[in-house]
Amino acid sequence: MLATTEKSLSPKQVEQLEKFGRRVNSFGVNFAVCSSDGKPVLLCEDGGFKSDEKMIMENCISAVKTGVDCKEHGANRLSTTDSQILVTVLNFGPDEPEFAALLDLSGLSGSDSDGLQSEYLGQMLELLAEELESAAKAEKEIETVSTELSQVYEELVLLHKLSTNMKVNTSDANFLQMACDSLTEIVSVEGIAILLEKTVEDKKQFVLAAGSGLIDVDYYMADVLNSRLDEELKRGKEALLDSEVDSPFRYNWAENIKNIIVVPLFCKEKTSTDTEETSQNNRGIIGIMVAINRIDKPDFDSTDIKLFNSVANGCAVFVENGRLFKDLKELFIGSLKALTNSIDAKDQYTHGHSERVAFISRWIAERIAEKMPLEEEQIHRIYLAGLLHDIGKVGIDEAVLRKTGRLTEEEFSRIKAHSSIGAGILS
Image 1: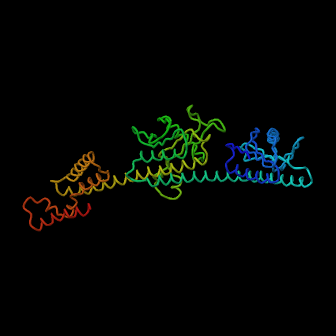
Image 2 (image 1 turned 120 degrees about the vertical axis):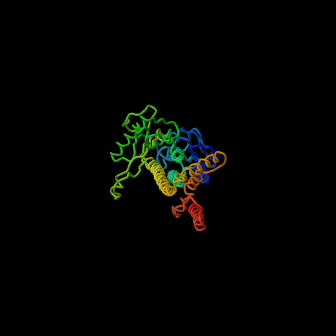
Image 3 (image 1 turned 120 degrees about the horizontal axis):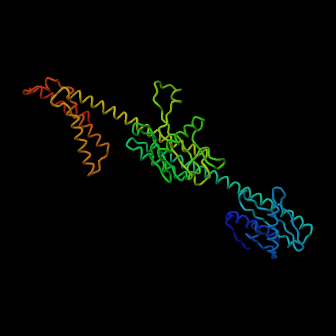
C-alpha cells in the first residue's frame, strides 16, 4: 500500500479512504485516489496485481473533467482494452478541489459472480463518495457555527469589559481609548476614532477623544462625518455605511478610504417633561465613532453595525454618567460652601476661614501626592475635611462666638462640643 497525502485532504479523510482501500483489497481489486490533475493521493495495491498508474491517472483526470458526480450518476464504469475500472468524483464542497476515487477491477475474471461483485463494489464506491461529502459538509457547518460562537463570545467579553470599567474615577479619555483598543481586537480595521462634542471658543464641535490605527480626523472631517451621519439617521438608518464594493460611493471621501462606518453616541436630552414619548424621541448626539477600511473582509455589514452601536452606547452611557456625576459633585460642593459661608457669617472674625483652610489643605495634599502615592479621592476628602472642620459652629449662639471677654465654664463646654460634632460628620 502506497499513500501520499495533499494539504486539501484532512488526516481523517485520508484515514477513511485507507480503510475503504483495505476493504476492497479483500475482493481482489485495487483502489486509488487522485487529484484533479492526476497526481496520486492514495494507492492501495493489495488486490493481487499491480495497476497501471498511467491508466489510473488518465481515467481520474477524465472523470473530474467530465464532471462525474456520484449523486447524479453513481459510480461510473469505464473500460479499456486491458483493464476495467469504476470511478467517481469525491466532492468536498463548492470551494474545495475535486478528487477522483477509482477501483481497478483487472484482477476479476469476468464471470457472472464477478459481475455481481463489481456491481456491489460500485455501490460501495458510491456510498463512500456520499459519506465523505456529507462529513465534509457537516464539518464546514460545525466550523462556521464555532466561528460565529467565538465571535459572539468575544463581543460579550468586550461589552462586559466596558460595563465593569464604568467607574467614576476613570477619565473619559482612558475609557474611550480602552473601548477603541478592545474593539480593534475583535474587528480588524485600518483605523478607528471616537469624537466627543465639546465647546471650543464658544462654539460646539466634535473633538478627537480617542483613537487607534491610521485615521486622520480634523475639525473639517468631524463636521462632515456628523452632517452625513445625521442625514443617514433621518433616513431611518442606524449608522452611516459607505463603500465601493457593490456600488459607487454615496459620498465623496479621501482617496485612502475604501469603506467606512460611523455610529452615534446618543444621550437623553433635557426636556421639560419626562414622558415615555419624549424620552424615546429626544436624544442628542454627544459624540461619534468612526472606523475605516475593514481588513479581513471587503466591507462593514449589519453585524458590525450592531457591535459598533453596542460599544458606542456603552461609551455614551459612561460619558453621560461622568457628566451627571460632575454636576452632582459641583452641586454638592456648592451646597457645602453655602453652608460653611453661612456659618462663617455668624463670626466676622473667621469669615472665609473654612474655604481658606480647605484650599490650603488640598494644596498640601497635592504636594504630598507628588512625593508619595495619594489617590485623587483622598485629596478630595482632605478638601472636604477642611471645608467642614468648623461645622460645629452651627449649634453655638452668636453671642458666645462674638464674646470678647472670658468664657464661663458653661460657654466653654459648648465651644468644646462643636469639635466633636464636626468630627462625627467627617467620619
